[in-house]
Structure formats: C-alpha cells, structure tokens
Length: 343
Image (cartoon, rainbow, N blue to C red):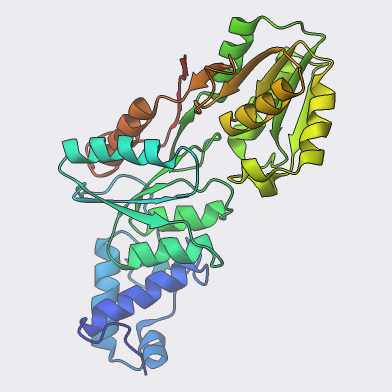
C-alpha cells in the first residue's frame, strides 16, 4: 500500500509524484517503457483508475507518452513550457565571497518582474540531487543553480528539465545539453589582465586553487597557458577555499619564494590575490599583479582587477528563465559568456 507523504493530497497526485521520482532516479530512463496500469496499481496498492489519472496527468505534462498497443513510455520534453516567474529558487553557496553580490543582482531582476526569490543553501552532507528534487517536489519550477564545487550528474539535471523544471546554471564555464549556462567570460578576463599588465612572457606566474575540475578555474588556467606557455602555475590546496586567512604560513612562504623570481602574477580569484600579495609585500617582494574578482584591499595593493558584471549576468539569467516559460519564445539552450569589467 502506498504511504502518502502528504495525506491531504489527492491519491492520483501522489502516484504521479512517485512515478516522477522513479524517473528522476533513473529507474525508468527516458525512452523506456514503464509498467502497465495493472502492475503499477498492484505496486502502489491503488486502483487502476487512480493510476490511469496519474498517467493522464503525466502525459499532459509531456513526461510520458502513451501509444495504443505499445503501452506507456518515458518521453521527457526538454523544450520550453508554459509557466511564469512568480517564484524563482536559487541554490547557491552562501559562504562564497561573491554570494551577496550575486543575490543582490538576481533580487533586483526578480523584483522588476514581480517575482518572489527563494534561497536554498547548498546542502551539506546530502547529495545535491536530493536537494534539487525536493525543490521540484514542492512545485517550484524555476531554478538558478550555482553548484560551485559540488558535483551532480548531467543526466540528473536533464531529467529535472524533462520533468518540467526551468533551469539556468550560473558560473558554469561549459555548455550543457538542453540547459542554459551563464558565466563570466573567463578567457576574456585573463586576456584583459594580460593586455593591461603587458607582462614579460618569460617571467609570469598564475596562482590558483588545486581544483581544476571547477570549470571557471580550468578555463582561466587554460587561457593563461595559451598566452604564456612557459609560465609558472602555482596551486594552493582548495581545502582553504573560503578560509584564505587560514592558509598555513609555510604554504604562503613557499608561494612567496616562487613569486620572488617573476615580474608579473595573475590570480585566478581575488581572494588568493589579496592574501598572497599581502604576504609578498610584507616580504619586500613587488611585481605587477592582476586578479579576477574585486576584493577589499586590491587598490591599496595596486592589483589590477577584472570584476564580474553581476547585473548583466542576472539579467541574462532572468531572460533565460522567461524564455523557458514561453512556448512561443523560440528558446534553445545556450551558453552565455558575459564580459568582465576592468577596474
């Protein structure tokens, strides 16, 4: 017998939710058949009429297709769906240095569209997939996901999209099939700093976190090495991310020794620029420096900075969600690289 999570919900809606959960979990992949009405009725302990109503709803939502004589198959629709921006959910890392600026920019865009913005902290200790499906199960259909260093299978995001979510990935450096992605033009930001600083190609270093699987870090490092093939790449343990002031002195001293012989340093992120340049100045080491992401103290340390255009990013995110909510929008998934601002 089916145990209801929400006893007041109509039984056929609970069946619909259970089938959606099975599709999301990959029990019934896209394009594959699902059990017959009789089998589902026995599995859930309900009548075939109830199962039929649930399947009718899933067909209306373009989640399954039913063909006479062929049964019911999962048939996830990945295009735009009719809807609105009444509520927008943001899943993001609240501990990130730039969180407040991102949220402020998105909030401004949401207010202009009379949208209610909900925030969900990235989960700690539970899979990101579980967090996102919980949002879906609550009936929230507009999602801005800033996953930072958390991993999630692309297939899980596509299933959410096929189940009816409108999704935009923020700070995602690579394109995703059937999903919109919005990020800083990472290669362009490195190029801006290189053009402004005009470093000696034979004496340039790049300081980053040792987390190359983060797409933005990977893009920035790749661009640096394309400009300076003989440049030095220095990686700092990612476990100190968001704890930059706690980087052990021995690590900082090793970085300073490596920077003592270069004329220019580019920092993948602003927080590393502030910490490392402050340590270098205390040691009497001076060189040209540039970083991506404005942080307090950059001007005092004379660090050239490329700032992310959070307003432009937020506007693009909201436009993507608007298009995904209009079936006549001509929406198709795209990757948007937003130019940075050289300060």
